[in-house]
Image 1 (cartoon, rainbow, N blue to C red):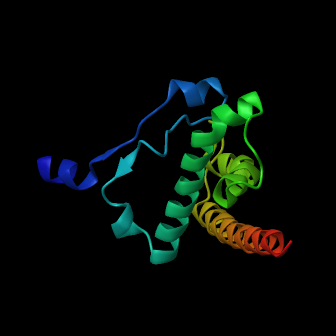
Image 2 (cartoon, one colour):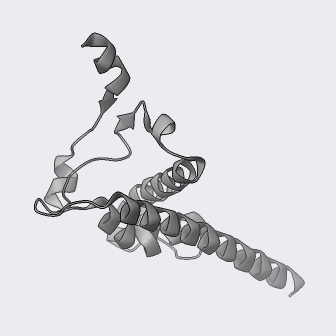
Length: 138
C-alpha cells in the first residue's frame, strides 16, 4: 500500500475562491501537483499544460488590475493573450457533476488552446516590435 501511495501521490488542491466563482470542480491547477503527469503525458501534452498554466498564472497576476480598470492592454503580450483565452481555458477545466469527461476531446482542446495562445503571443510580440520601430523612426 505504501508503494502504491508513493507512486500515486499527488496533491489536488481545492479552492473555495474558485468554487465561489461557480467553477467546478474547484481544483486550483496552479497549486495542485502531480508526480506522475510527466510519465503519463507525451511531450505535446506537457508543453500545452505548461503553456496554459502560464496563462492562468499571468491572469491571476493581473486580475486585480483588471477589476479596477488599471490594466493597460498592449503592455504585455502574454497577459493580453491570457485575458483573451481565460474563458475557453476555464471551460476546459470545468465539468458538471453529471458530465462524463472525454479524454481525447479534452486533450485536443488543450493542445488547440496552447497552440492558439503561442500564435497570439508571437503575433503580439511582432506587432509590438513593429510599433516600437515605427515610434523610433518618428
